[in-house]
Length: 240
Length: 216
Image 1: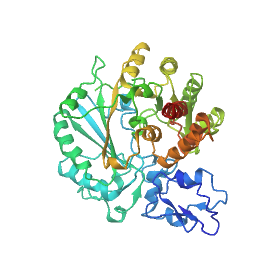
Image 2 (image 1 turned 180 degrees about the vertical axis):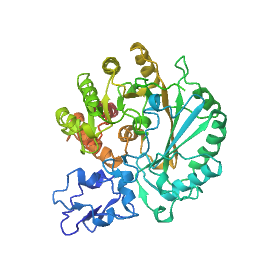
Image 3 (image 1 turned 90 degrees about the vertical axis):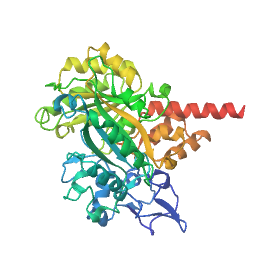
Image 4 (image 1 turned 30 degrees about the vertical axis):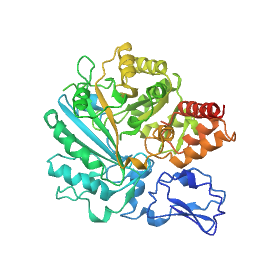
């Protein structure tokens, strides 16, 4: 994003809207710190500039910078992935896809959310460890397409310094790998220069309990009281 | 996306906060006829006490002027819709009607686990899969205070900023905005409509009450 200096009246109305605080006052005018900006478009869509000084410059549509808006503005499609948003269908359609069966878990690591944003270099600190652990990052995820093809977990170098509002890594593992996966990955997160919202996909037991909650408690991990629950209305139902 | 998963706040506040997704799956039940099914579900939402819904592609939510009829026309190219509710009875109405409509599209409810499971059972449904939130890790010193975090996490794409919430809180405290009008302004960046304006206005009223008690 950019603010036309000659048009800006310096009212500052746009400043609070920026999710990553990249709009600053500069000599009585508002200006975008374009290295910090994630091109989410919130300041533009807010329609609060009395001088119509805010715009998306052409450079924002050119690679590698173009990935910023793809991961930050939910109204922009990921061109190779043909979808919008940050991640995948995860468990939303699990009642018809059977993507996660009983005895399997999905781990969702959302980097940069809430409200901080992240460079891909921060995410890479985790993807390389995931690959060293032999875990597969799920392919139906827009971050996957930015990784090197050598399965090292490294991103293509041109994307490393790009900043996005958030991006989700998703991978699946078996019941017997739960302790090792979380035991290795969760401690890594504290050294990152961003925040990470962590989610875990699991099947309900037949009695509608969620057995993994007890296992997580033994590992010192508390589960929030709210969750996303697929209520089993999809058809044809898959129950594997 | 994990979207409505990581809504922050105490249980009492979350008791008035539910999001319901309808989503057709790629390669399974997405394709011809999905638009009509989604319109049917949108009608169920709007007849069951909906607080908000929206369209990221259209860049607008119900709380900021998107009309259901206008939104319905766009659903032929869509594969899912989301709406927000502020009480369990509305969720029960939606699940009952969605069961009767038998669209075959997956339905996901985000909210308090105990409440959602109970409501599902009351509607004769068997919960299939849960996505649990283990919370926020990493450089958490970057996060705002709890009151603000409750509100910014109501936008699943992180588009509602800490700065905007602090700005409207200051205006509410100064008497320049009512809690309800402040909630509408706060919801504006969240175009997909999962920002719960009802819960947000309630939070602003709580903040005002706390201020008033302190002054006393």
